[in-house]
Amino acid sequence: MQDLPNLILVGPMGAGKSTIGRLLAAELSRDFQDSDHEIQARCGADIPWIFDVEGESGFRQREAQVIEALTEREGVVIATGGGAVLREDNRRRLRERGTVIYLFTTVEQQLKRVAKDRNRPLLQRGDREQLLRDMFALRDPLYRATADVVVRTDRRSPRAVVNEIVRRVERLIDPLQAKA
Ligand code: S3P
Image 1 (cartoon, rainbow, N blue to C red):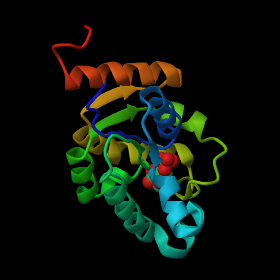
Image 2 (cartoon, rainbow, N blue to C red):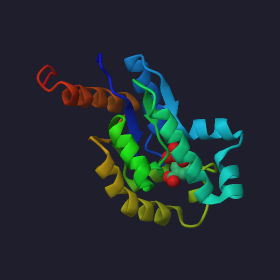
Image 3 (cartoon, rainbow, N blue to C red):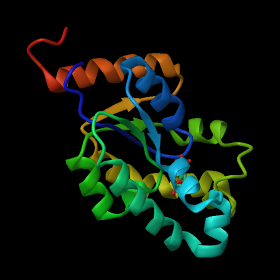
């Protein structure tokens, strides 16, 4: 892929955005950027601390600034946090500044992947399954409205998901030359 746009991964917690993003970037010899890592690096504190001290709204503010900065770059692979699509300004930026890939994941799969997680403040507030179901109901339409491509991730290896992303994006960019 030569004239590669930014490839931006959206999707819920436990979708594998960081793992798949890193693999995808290596496959395409591109830089990988992870918005949660960037937020923590800029702030010098981890995400639970930011939520504790500044609340979710403080975190969302920082997240919007980082999305603005990361999407200004060119030809990079970006993994976003699960709540990045909540703000309209983020959704617009993501759509305008890259090809957006929604890593679709079932709540069952998410539950397996985040079972022992202590670093995601939104999951420490009660019945994890119900929290994830409520988030899915709110966010799945937002992920879909933002994405150019939806890729299923449950019960598939990161490598298989990466191969599908590359195929689908090639087809988007150059429908005539891409292999069927
Ligand atoms: C969040 C997801 C997390 C992180 C923060 C909030 C969310 O990122 O940004 O805990 O609102 O879904 P991951 O999707 O990488 O876990």
